[in-house]
Length: 489
Image 1 (tube, helix red, strand yellow):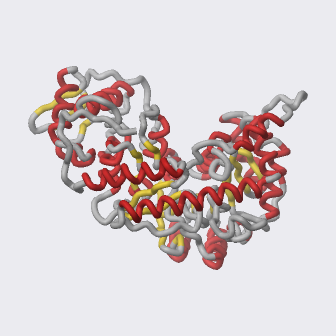
Image 2: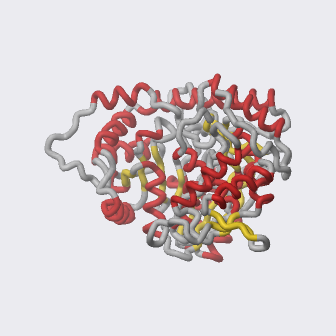
Image 3: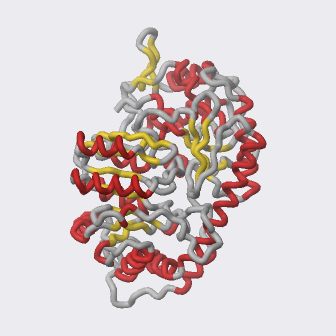
């Protein structure tokens, strides 16, 4: 497989977050990609100038890195035919399965190096209640521990949560998953075949886009505007293409933060049912509204889930954003026959999710409102602080307020998010470019920034972003090829 320029830049990851000459840091990461087989023998590499511009470095940095690898025998450079991986380079045997080039995931695989991660939006640490709940659980003494559909106590707790939100639900309509990501993955494996159309929003959650591409599906994007998904366009796609699946984030959309009005949500559900399109609603962020977080019910201001408009809507949720990503507890809610099929598929892959974690999740859901109110209050404070710091240090950036959730959708006044992200990395902060989330190929000037970190860390992150922006010159490679690189921590 020959990677695109964007994929190569994503695979390079935080290549510049180290000490030493920049060309050696770049050569080391390209060497690693060759040795791992991501760059197979004969694969062409981008021309010097194109890669230099994409990485926001001087052309001499790329030339020196390529020459270093040529001297090692890993690259071949010929006038007129460009630069390629050497034919003798080692590569793992057998066909390579698709691997993610998503910066959001790749940053999680990097070692801790002083970079402030604004690229992966998740609570940085668990609330104290999580540890307390683990200390109080009692493991069953007469149970094998394999529950592909989920522990009955947790399925019942999730079903009660849906009923409290106005959606009649029985435990048999709940499948417990290892996070929402697994839930989306199982639905994709069950419902989508290679070549099938999948309706997605543009932009959208990049983890879902990765799963659809892995399934060799054809993403069919519909734009998201100020009022959320363009429902009229989505209905037209359903009628014309009859996609195998429609994936939407209607409430506190990831990444734009928009909320789909209830009337449009009802129309979307009716269209999906009329055209026989399975409609998957990502609900992971839906309860993190900023409306009245101190009230008696933190979800009182929430827009009803799409499943309240139709029995066939498939909901995907988790505790990763409301509680902690490390808990790895999610679920799928849908018609009981679909849940039974998903459970059989899940049994094939992992036999069931972690039992202690499920017991903790059930305990947390039984007294969820205080925990949710505290999380929303923290998020609103972080939201206000990040917007204030951006307004103070980067007033030219467009940064509208969010109705909830964990992120801001920021527009740069010029340039593009991918090349700016490279400069930001060299100033010690990782951001998620908008183009990585947009199957339409748009959102080039957008960045997704989360506000989950401690106040002093958020303030420092914006200081680093401002320093990077002062250095940024779009379309112009910058930085000396042999400069020493260090990150101020």
